[in-house]
Image 1 (cartoon, rainbow, N blue to C red):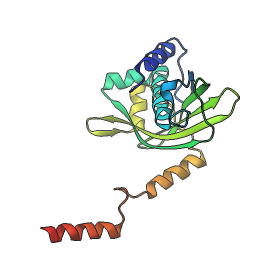
Image 2 (cartoon, rainbow, N blue to C red):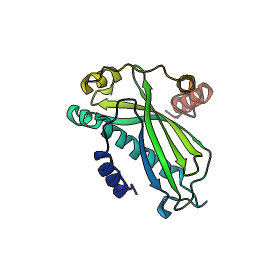
Image 3 (tube, one colour):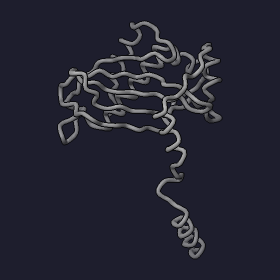
Length: 193
């Protein structure tokens, strides 16, 4: 179940915090509750994604992007994610989550997010490829920034982000189907008809 109470609490807190710039970092504090854990007694990886979702939502609120999305009738979607898990977050443990835009290209806005334990260890870190969409598809980041009234250029994307983008561009689509299996599938369909 989606944590609506947590979302509302964070939205209330974010509404009282100072406005952020396009490339600033939103920081929020959380606890790992019993309903957040998996059978291994740690923060569930699915819940981690949900908490990252809440963090990005608060980032859009604090930067003012949420108002632009509402005014224009646009939505935000995740087009890809890569996560590293390094430290367990146990029940009742507190942690800090950081969310920020790293930069953008002609189609995507890249966001990084991470969770840090009280001792300063990074528990996990994610890189997300996000898009703004309308009824016709993807809205170019340049158009989003213009509607937002921002005259900000994307910083150069870090090398590790560029490498991830290049790796994503090599990934086959549709997934789990190579040329040989596609030909076999086509042959099976042809013989069945």
